[in-house]
Amino acid sequence: MKISSSENHLADKSNPSPDNGTLFCTVHTGVATSLRCNKCNRPMCTACAVRTPVGYRCKECVRGQREKFYTAQSLDPLLQAGVGFVLGGMAVTLFSLLRLGDLGFIGWLIAFWIGSTVGAFIGDMAHRVVGKRRGKYSYLAAGGGIAFGAVLSLFLFGLSLAPLIFVVMMVSGAVGRLRLGRH
Image 1: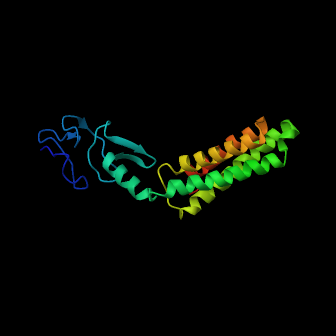
Image 2: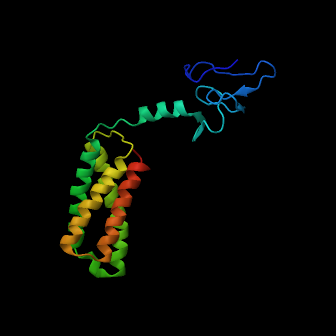
Image 3: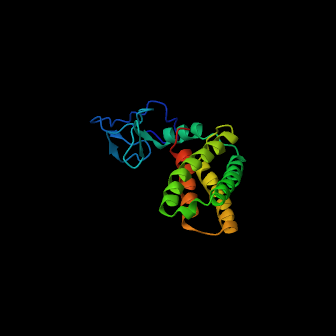
């Protein structure tokens, strides 16, 4: 009994061969398999399987799960980039005005530690300004905004190593918070 891939994938798709009970992938009907989606129980080959933290799932179940997860609206990346631009520029301006780069190695360490904390804070603010909606590329919008605002501020105050370390850590802190963080 062969089942076409156009049928509803949530239906029981056990696809055993009538002679020996072998299962065949519902998409690649000529490929024998013993692997099933752990959500809809559909037989799938290794080419159709997607590894998730809870086991292997078919591509349709993963696609449906991602659509529920990402709720961003069309203006959200622009808002997040704007928040990153303004706050990133302000943070680099303040860092440069405090002249922490003049402290040498200690200034570099301060830039390293404070930069990631400030970046995480900016990532939080970028997430809150859009009502805590998630976007597939929110981290890129906020990180790009921070980088652009910070680079403009760096050109106003001059390039040196400590503010540059501060910018890199700010961007990585915001990206880490939005992509991997607790949101």
